[in-house]
Length: 376
Image 1 (tube, rainbow, N blue to C red):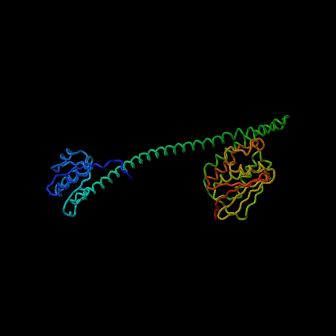
Image 2 (cartoon, one colour):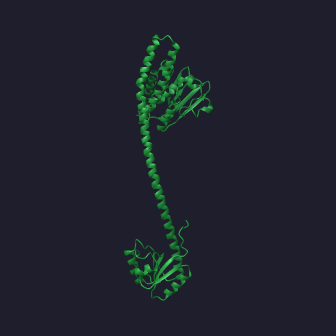
Image 3 (spheres, rainbow, N blue to C red):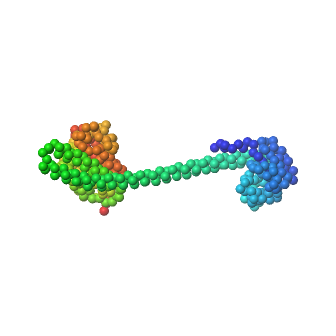
């Protein structure tokens, strides 16, 4: 990294001392790019007069140097943070390194090299610290923003779930009343076309409420052991309660491998998946549909197959999108709102699994997904 702080002309304060080599060092440093101030006594007052913020302080005698550095460390640590250098021609044993930062021999060239290297590294480290502080500030700001967004998303999710559940609950009772009224009117009505229209409209409304109800009941996933045949039969019975499929339940054929163990799934979620897939199969075919389950490794593979109109290859990736219809006329011809398969994918996503579909136009479609077995 290249430092942003210029250190080509470092500021030095040199404490004038008795050693003969002191003048040689002073002259050398003055000639090699240093802004050098010399003070005659080791006092903080003299230091402040020489320069408020030197890059380095050099003491050329051990006695004066140690005492002076001690004063700086004790009284000016917060405001004066220069590099403290002790230059000595003797090997100093047990030197208190908490006072001076570095001890150098009285070699002008060596002192010059070490000073420039250390000051450059100190300035680069200062730049890094500043950058880290800026990054920390940005990170904390982003984290705060992220936490706020998560809180907002959580609140929105709770609100959405509440709306879904409340809407489905509030619509069920008036829908049941409308169905009963239409049934009673049909017994004495002379205009059969008008009654059929009312039944068709009520069936579409019932399908919409059913999908909202299924979505609301499947938002929270609580996996546990689920018996496969029970789940399929439950979904089949629920379909029988819907006007649209009341006469179609007999077309459902269940084919399960013998002695299938339970699967790990959310019970309501699996019921919803099976009900929506069977609903879809019955809607787009006039013959029998098959619901099968078989072992495959440590999974149970479920398949719902119909022999109906099929799906074009270019449509297969789109059918799980919410409100998507295979063609513009499918709503009129087959009913539905285009949300059933989207709900299936949503629930399977929450089970950490996926669904696949194979289809050929005019021959039917097969929807397949898998869930882990539970060996009891």
